[in-house]
Amino acid sequence: MREAQRQFAEQHSQVNIITRHGFPTNPLFDGNYFLSDGCHYHALGYEVLADWISHMALYDFYNGSVDFQAPQVISVKRETSKSLSIEFDKPIAIQPDLKIDGIVYTVKDQLFAVNSKKITSISELKVDSKNPKKLRITFKGKRLKKGAVLTYILGDTYPETSIPYRGPWLVDARTGIGAVGFTSTIK
Image 1 (cartoon, rainbow, N blue to C red):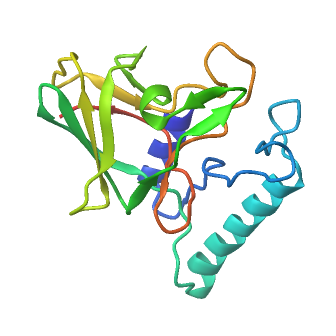
Image 2 (cartoon, one colour):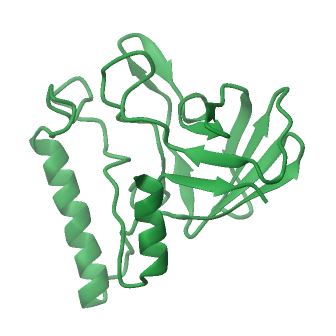
């Protein structure tokens, strides 16, 4: 579904995407902005989402100075047999690791798959210091081939739990809005 939404916006220039990814930690509910149903938010979640949407409308309709559209993938390129670069349409950042119920979750261990198989062999994930629109991924022991398919954002819960996934994410370096999930062929 996320890939279909991304492609729709890519094909229709007047459609903008904002994601629910990247919400700040909720200080009132142990960091969680979801209600127990895993779908709806506490008040803070709705406040953050409303703030993002209003800023997006300000930018789109009233010449606002900050673009609140979610970062979108431009390309995924194989650099070596063990590394990739992912280019986005705007500068990105990696949210810090997040501890939930005693388990530390990281972007590099939770959010990527190659050919529909979750990747647990990422040794390094970093934003390129010379081009903050690029993310570099280095793998340990994994050989990447052109034509393989990389997916970002695998599911809506933490592995082997029913806890709604609330981070960490890849986010817009300026606004904190999460990048749009994607499925892209490695070139």
